[in-house]
Amino acid sequence: MGCLESEAGQESTDVSYGKDPKFKHHLYNEYKFNLESSWSPDLVKAIDAKLNGLTFNRLVNVYLDEAHEAWMSQIETFSYVIDSTGTWLFGSVL
Image (tube, rainbow, N blue to C red; front, side, top):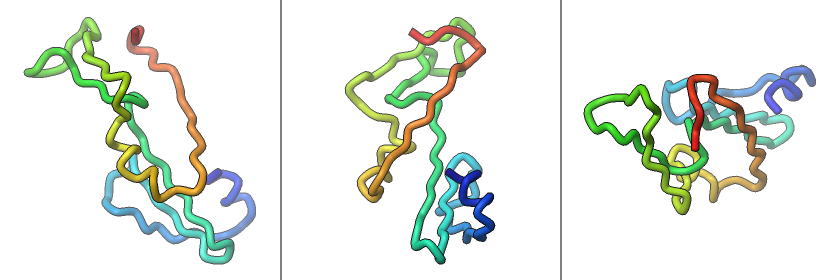
């Protein structure tokens, strides 16, 4: 969506809540349109199984009944949600 908006030649105003580039909020005044992008490693809550650091064998506690708080905390304010996912090449996720 951000690419489409930039191709239309309209400038956006960055109204992000903080400085973290993983969470951006852009306002397009002319269209009365907000675009927010939130990044999280998983769609659901996941906690590394090793408490004192990252595990190299990718042991992770996954909570399938709980959404990841990075994006879930904002979802009620959205009219539409477009979900885009990818594949991590660092290892398998089960």
